[in-house]
Length: 212
Image 1 (spheres, rainbow, N blue to C red):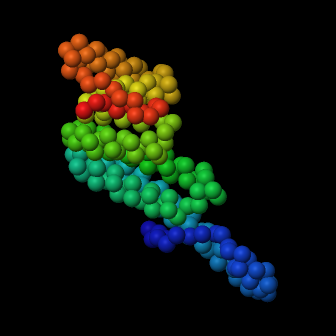
Image 2 (cartoon, rainbow, N blue to C red; image 1 turned 120 degrees about the vertical axis):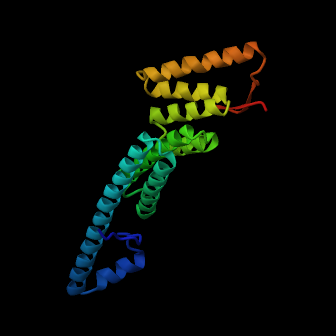
Image 3 (cartoon, rainbow, N blue to C red; image 1 turned 60 degrees about the vertical axis):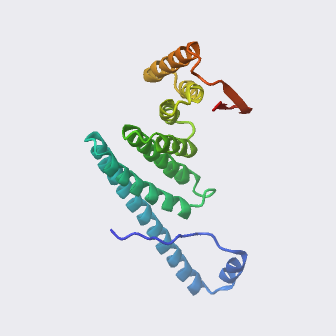
């Protein structure tokens, strides 16, 4: 299916508004038809992006279940690029619902990427992808859970503990997250007893970094 790739805007500048008001009714009718065509083209582009993005996400999930993580990441990245392009075309103020819906889709895709990177033991890309998921949707508990798990793999146990607590604050019913939190606390206690865990440094309110 052919889709529109150029950004579409339904706003008129002040100069354009004046010329539109001074035009004849025939031109007004023509402008209305053009506006309807643009709107329909934009709707078609949205539907196309949504369907292609969903297909890529499903294909990537299938590949990941088969252990083909690099191929899955390629599919997820294609879907991410499609949704990012759509965000650039949307007016955040006048299309807030659609903007947030697209941002939520990106959040899911980044979280899936983080899972794949973790399976591939690409520990830092896993953290980066989880952080991007949170930027797209910071009220999704699964994103905080994913970031916490990724931070365990790079030894950032204090941060992992805080972010797992954030996950549970958003959804206390996630039993796996309680188990994860217990595991993190156990690791911290074990390493502290062996003097192997660096102390946290408070860099600014709400932000903790581990001492190198």
